[in-house]
Image (tube, rainbow, N blue to C red; front, top):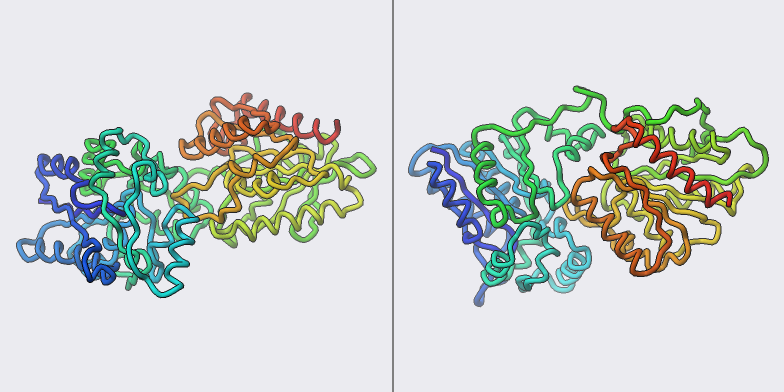
Length: 503
């Protein structure tokens, strides 16, 4: 018999698993939903991550003392921290760890790092720094749950029950670093990704293809993945589907990632959708220039790749087929095409990468072959967050800002992002700066939601935004979808950007 030990996340208890636990039991499994110790009474400040690890260990030890059975540990959200802490100490008794819409905690890193709201994360860090971890974090009000994860799919009644049963969280549980020896790293594992939170198997595979060190281990043969079309609370929104996934995970089922270098060519290295001239690059530090044949100072389009991309990725992002293709196409049309090297290697790097881009732009503007007063910036994918500083204070020489399949608001599943990089908020200050957004119809739901949020904010403030739709296009359509629709979308976007530079 398979034994499932279900560990809840922030503010919740064993009750959140009721429906899923009942379904697993009906399927013949043994189920234990863990009630993590909560703050309360005179000793509330003593509850920390080690307390919760002990809670999970106690259940494991009771199961092991009775019979040797396969134990599947399931950690939701914050619950993955005590799960990993316990699995690290009882690795010989664990058959599989299931990460349910959870991050991948690392040794020495506290759960605070995974809190999605940057304002709240900073507030908690400051509170800890002024006298040590004290007190508790109040349970969310009904309208505050989205700060902790997408509520997509959760009914109003279920959200009411979640709110009514929520309990405060001891701050020490978030501030105490997780300590791991590495014993749990070799255990079979399954990631259950919730699309409403922005995660997808495709995006994890992209991390493997890019050489992300953390993602490489996810391509091990004993690691599997499932996707659920819902938000952060699948035990409330899709309990039947979650039950099926957990049973299949226990049996070793699920999608396995392809190790880097195997299988088909990764998306970022596939050919650009347009046939463009083989114009050579001219490298100047962190920028590559692709120069047109026309004489005299020419307008320039600076292309900013997305990310995060692991440091040392080869080829370097500014040499990928898409940025190079766009830059050469720009030169073919009579303007200077520019690709940029920036250091967006982690979600914590946005400020550093934005500074790299700003320095690169000044280098381009100082080139005598460039018309310094006619510059466009074109951002891609995760680079979209770096549009915020330019939207907030557009310089007079910036004639156009473009963004293709962009991320326009931080995605919680990627981790905390500097609050300055929120285009949805910055667009209110864009004035009459023309903005071109290339939107794909088959975008991942979480990224699509950020684009719609940006467009809604743009409409409210009267920003000048042109949307170019690629109805059947996917993220990175300009390399993964070699269709006439894709080619025409690239042509339209280029005409729009260059038109604002030369008009």
